Image 1 (cartoon, rainbow, N blue to C red):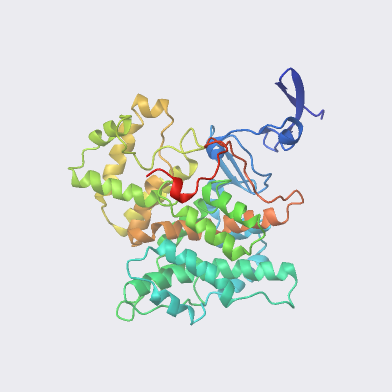
Image 2 (tube, one colour):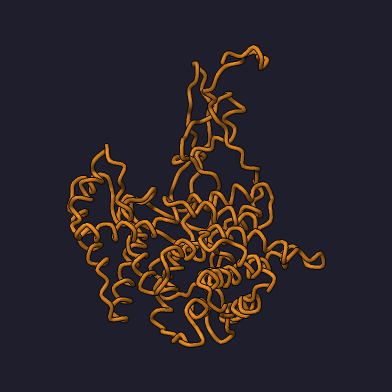
Length: 431
């Protein structure tokens, strides 16, 4: 295939930059030599038009509503896979054999316990501390409790760190919830699957044993699979950026958790529920809220609609909607927030404003209702997202560490401040 080039003309001089093509046909102009050749940089606030890396992990097509992990459509993984199997796929590049999956599951079980001294850290946080802040701090602290072992090879060390993170983050999340309630901590069980173990650690108590329901376990598996990776989003970009300084995996993941904490990223599922509750408190009529969302002078935003990349219906939202109906039917529970969500979706999808602006429901629109049905408290919603996104962060960090074209991330800027001026001694400055 003949190499294509893009031409850039500056002050009458022509420069050529190669066009690179991905396996799915997406095209990009390689401007890695732009500053060296022209003295110029590009200006792209929010990096919406900037590719920061080449990756073989996740493919997205926002116009067609496509999402694939390592080539596998998200719809197939949600229907047939488990979260542990999907995590293996993302981190290792291929679906595991039965022997590989069993070995991976055993490793997750072996590393599921948390150092007892870490409980003192948990109990030292104020009761009102947000779980995401606690989780970020505790993940960073893991390096101190589990330092590298010199006798291990680099590959062995990474494998142990990966399984340790996947297993212990789940345990720490459940532990933080129990401690925040003043309840006895429930330890992981060797006979339960990854998702079932989490639900048991969250909700089991000596006076009311938790009964494992396979449908609810399946729902949690699907929730985590749908959130496992999503290309170069804010938190993943943060993991790659911090990781580019060659920090340890714990520090890079801690940075990702902090980025995910934001209400415009991982906190969106919590914001959807808060919005639906607000609509409920105001009588359940969705139209005033839709009109507010369309008003440019009103800061109100309709949470759960629209996406930075998807310009059509988020494929994850369709799957999440089915899971939502299935869980509520199984629990024989009527959630009035689901009725409001349905009305909101029905009205919005017929409104020209939402159609013209590609504001379709995203995965957060229904995921909050599913978590609510599972009994997950509102302030734990973003933690649930973090557990799901963990294998994606790990695979992205691992890929960047193995990239032969690795470079320390160092974006440029256009300075618009004051020009050079002389220092004024303090006694000569005007009051």
